[in-house]
Image 1 (cartoon, rainbow, N blue to C red):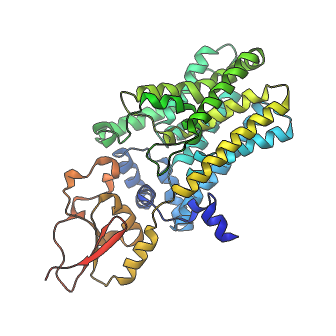
Image 2: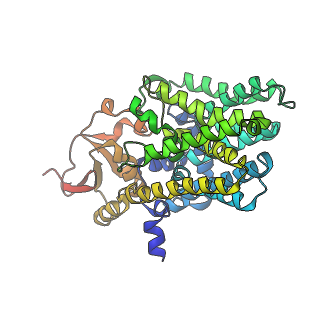
Image 3: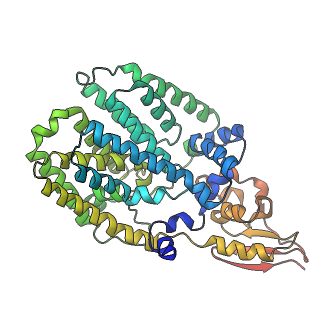
Length: 436
């Protein structure tokens, strides 16, 4: 039973080997607080996730499961905020509809994948959801907390913040408790950080992104991409993605046209969810036809708001049997996609590779990686001081692979002299070499 759970279900993501970005998270978070702040100011993400992870490591250790558990906690706290959304803002009273709606979030492929990864995306999802909840509930204290720390977790939180501002200016009369100064404090804190980043010569400001341009033909899959987090670079092709996208778009349009009056009774809620869950991601997608900035995992907060938008639409259907049927269709697509994700998105078994190397290493032996992409993984599984990058100039290494944690002395061009040996790692294999 356990073998099945940890090999054929999303729990496989919990126990598999680390990949580069997760190893980077650990290596950055284990540094002292001042170093974390200065290093993240030169990198591509703000410091808040790494600061939390720093203390998490001090308390619980540094195994893969321990490090990933932090994301899993924020995943479940996010689900709880979604529950508050459904009961307090949507005021859903039908228990079966409420349970099915919650399941739709729990099994969402994008949310569940990053619930088992030692990266900041689930924390971003949490702050995006909490900030949106506080905005619609007009709770100033919670809004200040969630929005400020969201902006200090990932730069794409700015799109959630922009959604709040637009919704506020369009619906001023409905948002009676909300004032413009609600938005001033998070913005000030973010601007202070951004000024600090600017003076640290941030790589993000001075180099190209790794994100690829979108193609106009992918527009037909847009809605399903936001829902699932699907990227063409994955090791599989989801053949039903266009059908799913068309279904999602048609259902949205039909319900809006038939239930327009009901939907607009809570005009602010409808406007905000449509704006943040669909319209702004669509604008980002269109911009990415020319300047690549669209990456589904960076829009994980918008994924939650899109699903909330879908549930809000379905909650306005009088015949619950119809809304149940549509929910089941969405659940079908979620599980169908999840099967492919579990099968094809497994990370390479680096743990096994480096465990074997570690068992053979003598006191003065070293590990050389041919690709800089393997540098952090080798450091995590072996030892930071025994890993080098072999025969690559420092200038060749792109900034976006975490260059802030790669010192110039990590580059080597010569093999050690026997009896010292170098274990040269090339992807998932290695050879042992020395100079004589």
